[in-house]
Image (cartoon, rainbow, N blue to C red; front, side, top):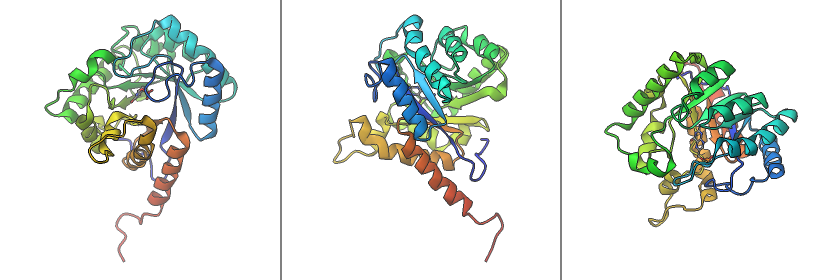
Length: 283
Ligand code: PMM
């Protein structure tokens, strides 16, 4: 992996779902004004990028049309851009990606890694922006049933390699591609941890974005008396722990609901890394 240089800060992508049904913040920012206010708050809390999405990908979520999605996200991206806030667009639709970049977004984040919309790769190549290619196997209603891996690290690595090849063949500059393991997508609890613990084994030197924030597998990891933490907000401390560990492992970015908590964790990682004695130092 391109390790974040010692002390260099991992990027914080703040989550802003302009949807009625996302798993943690669904319904909170469905109105444009509330969404803009939330985006400004995320930036104020230290998010380097605000990731604006108009379609929920929670397990079982229904898809929305690109028109509905565009109407949800474009005014928010335009307003945040005008306020000087950098944004990414979380979409599987090429037309939404184009409209969002024209409104000011600087990164396209596609949870399907370009697999949903045949036009996505060429669109991103033409827009010449960074592209987050997440590991994905199927749309939301089907994805949990596709959590079947002999070796999750090797298989996710191979499937992401295939995405990189296809994207590059369509004209996307290789250095524009960021990989994401797709935590929780066709991965029920146990499949997520090997991907986090072995970032370099599957990313092989590419930039990595980690999106663990408040997901179910964290709720399972912090179960008390055999009961998972069912409320997504109760998974926040676990999220912050993942942020610190991902940063220490050299992740390029983390995608989180609570930007302030992530920034604090990254400061801790930097202080820790900067205090490390140089290689070869001996008393
Ligand atoms: N997870 C969600 C949505 N978009 N994008 C990337 N790159 N990585 C993720 O893990 C990811 C994503 C899940 O939904 P949320 O917006 O409610 O967190």
